[in-house]
Length: 569
Image (tube, rainbow, N blue to C red):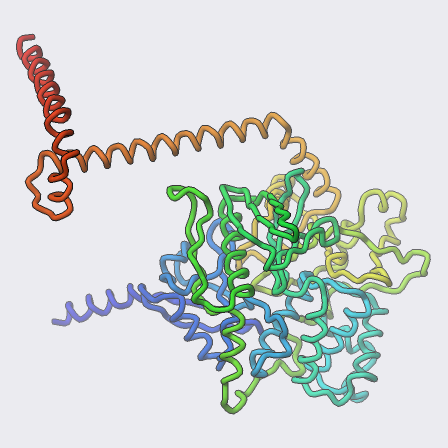
């Protein structure tokens, strides 16, 4: 009896899995889930813990063993989606950015979106001018520490918070000035609301970058925002397509296709190449979900989408949630006492860690104030969405950040990167750390160029090992050389051969099915209404007696002759 109880308890333990979800304030929520638990069960449990009702904007993200990011699908089993071994580690993040975050009904929802955009600002996904950066940082400061108090906030108090990867003393003084003069008296909720209103006006609001290459081999980043499809390339937005102009999205292998229908029946097809087939499929699924969420009027209009025009080829996917309009209508019906919000208070959060040991730029003569222009691709590759906040980097490695052409003209003691007075981009402030071993450096560099997302456990390490700009340029030139015309032709031939093989395989399968059906109709005694109706048709009787029976007798005769020949020998 005791042994049966022990075996039963051990089996029940085997059916339960430990799960840890990192929240937006970098706290962790741990729970156990059953083997057959769906993603919706885990998400509901998490939203109940957060006391969150407007939950359709959020999702759970995880990273598989191949370093590919995914959104947890709520209609499928959690355990079957997680290819890693338990305990499982995931992140709670904003999946669909609100079109108007200030219009959210509850303060708890606005606070969580505020934390997400604060992370975007810190990790370099939200780009802005210096004046906008100072205002956004001042809003964060007012929400975190309240009104300015000379007794509590000495000179340079704003440097205790790192709002961006790196900023200068001039920007710190501007942040403190706005905080002291303009924001006095604002409550945390008001500061967060003003922060959201300002962030919403920026071009890169809601951008979650997907690294790709265009048909010419140039690096690009694709993103889906509340307003449409965006392509970022060469430090600027090269394409912006509204959701009502996106006609179709599909992918094949590493190739992603976007079909655009514009005015005057003008149709455009944009083609991009992802680093891996898995990354391309993730990009396609994100596009399907974003288009359904922002474009459709009702969730009943959602249809299953195929990645290919052929029924036997490609993936099929269906968005399973509500659309934005339904979410807004449902939010308007919420009537409850506002839940209590536990803010970070005076202690800087991990998303905005203390900068006591981090780099801070000192003032230099104006003649040396040159902006370090790093392309948006290089910055976003190293500052892609991470589960942890970016670690504070040592200032001793700032020399490696300067381009070689500039470094050769400047003295090593004067190599200081200064943020431009006109445009402030957090991407311009990345301080890569050189790697000592050459082989490890090449491995990390290839992962960075290919855009492979880092795992949750490796993200701090990966951001610390960002390659230098000169090395990235060398490897990019090498990659472009490898992508020559011969390689392109070989790839086209391989695709053609694969397509022909698939066509032959499907044709053979269809012929086999038809042959089996014919044998069942002619040789079996199954008395099914469907078969009986076919057998009674004149056409089938004529085929059976004039063609099939003679063919069967001929085939049986040949088999008997072969068998007799074998017996004689």
